[in-house]
Length: 210
Ligand SMILES: C[S@@+](CC[C@H](N)C(=O)[O-])C[C@H]1O[C@@H](n2cnc3c(N)ncnc32)[C@H](O)[C@@H]1O
Figure (cartoon, rainbow, N blue to C red):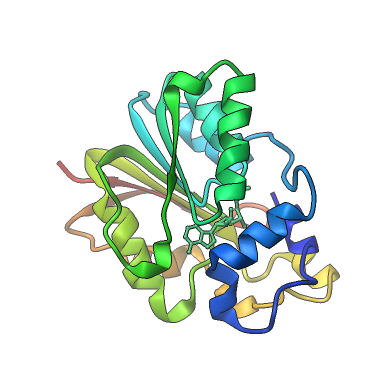
């Protein structure tokens, strides 16, 4: 889902501001819905074959992925820094009849605090952490994955031509390659099942060794 890069105008040039509640509440507050509501294609492709269990959607936004996962039998925690987004995620879960399997968690990833709980799937879709905290934050996500569980990291690839058409991503240094993700996942802990760069995206699926 790349539409979000259209909504640039109120973001300042400061990278740290891209990850605050203030920024995201303002952005979500600009319209009733900023995403399509449909699940991300990369999630659908890679989670379809996983046995449902407990999932954590990091940067869940309005809950499109969380609702889809819940519909497939997952118990989902939708985590986001924006309470505005989380209220929408809860409403969408209720509309879809899966409210009993979706809970929301207001959490700021940038605090560096450990994520509460452990999960069979931790998914981060189009969350592009600050470069200098990339390893740390992916480590936090990975630490929340149970043995045998999966970490799915999806982002825009730095060569994404759609970003170029729009005059470039505002912070191109935040976009990452599959190699950059794999490099921060210790090989003794993670079995890399997918490290791919399909059409504009970066996709890494890693399973925590038992
Ligand atoms: C680009 S959007 C992606 C939303 C959704 N995953 C999707 O693919 O449509 C990034 C999301 O990360 C959230 N976010 C940004 N900074 C965060 C932080 N510090 N902690 C937790 N979530 C954050 C935003 O509120 C936003 O919902």
